[in-house]
Length: 268
Image 1 (tube, rainbow, N blue to C red):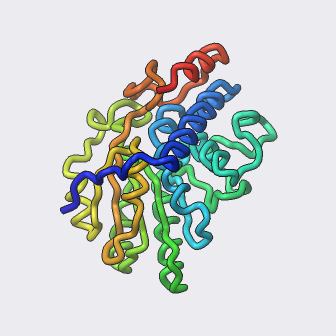
Image 2 (image 1 turned 180 degrees about the vertical axis):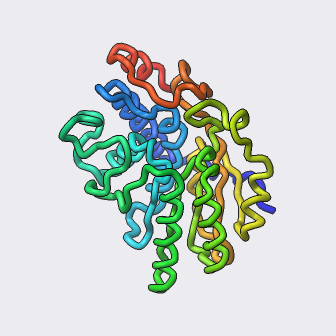
């Protein structure tokens, strides 16, 4: 049984990734200060997972990274901008009437293979992508990045069953385990006990990591080769902003520019 993945040693490359993650958090805060606001809590919890995934795979045309928890689109746009996949700063127009930076991932933008919004669908899209690469005999991977609240959707488990049935070993399912969802704490609404054992029952190799440790994230994002991989990434909702860290009610926010400036200055 896999235990906690250990982080590799500190390096200049890791410092660069930490800087990208910090800049992306700043961008997410700016998007929360736009006229529509954004899903800030989950965007801040998942951003390190996106930064790590793109660090490892953004040059691989045969690999698709699918943000299944599509309401956290602000984090996806921020990550794509940090890697130069998007040339326009999403914080400048996010949520605007004529903007392509919509509240859920917009496939009209580079680097976004699928529109996601209805929870669970992105998991199936990523598994389908992985199956396509397997049939084409490429080394491509399908990576779904979803939320723990999203696991209340039956489609997630239907996909896990299909992944097992079709032996899709080039599929990676990363779960942003921040413990919160739209209406409060996941534990108070629909708890997920024995989550590791659930995935193992569907034939997955399971790794548990600190979802804010970029070294651990990158080390974990390696296909098993024999089994599909589930990564349970333990995260904190609102990570980096002391005023909302760990607060399940910080799911969506529209903040003032003054508050945005204060939060950016205090980023941890």
